Image (cartoon, rainbow, N blue to C red):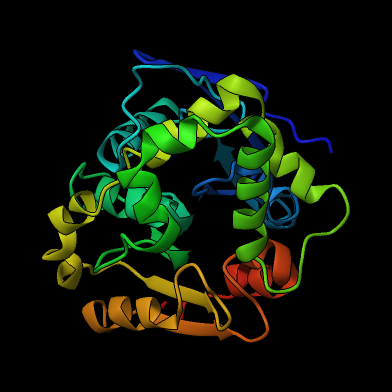
Length: 273
């Protein structure tokens, strides 16, 4: 499955790899966990028909460097996202963020004080009580999970990935998402990043959500089992001017379950503009 990240941005903790397509007003795509920019393989080319689209792998994910000692907290991801925006010389891009990418984008906007033209969050971590389920077990028992036999680790990650899609993966896709987390180094990297993602890093900006004045759009899969609809409603209550769009028959991974409908949302103008 071809997906090109042919550019690099050096950080003190390793190299982040990124790519860009198209021309026009800039739009930046921010992935979550345990995914990579590969999630945007169909979305980015569609958006590139009218925009210059930037995409990247967070440090510790995908094709970016993965090694012991990296700070993979949401706060650190936000600082590195701000660094990337500066590297790209983007002062007011449109930003689209998914899963923990939502928290990264919000921290970068509200605490790192970078400016966006507009912000779209879909099936995104934003705040509230989201440390739960398997994610909470990863936090509490990192050493146990790191010690799993390789076959058990791979089965667990595959089941976790399947849980995020309502319609199921097309041939070859699950294997591509599993690839960075295979083998001893991949297994260590998987639990390393999960063990550092903490709810306290979203609490830090929750009180500022009501101050958002830029156009904001929320898009949510009605069948999301990772971040069920109540999380969209929680965020909408705190950003009441935001548009809220439901995608029926889709789960957490709109890029997989409903790519056409997601692109339609992303290319539609904001109601407030």
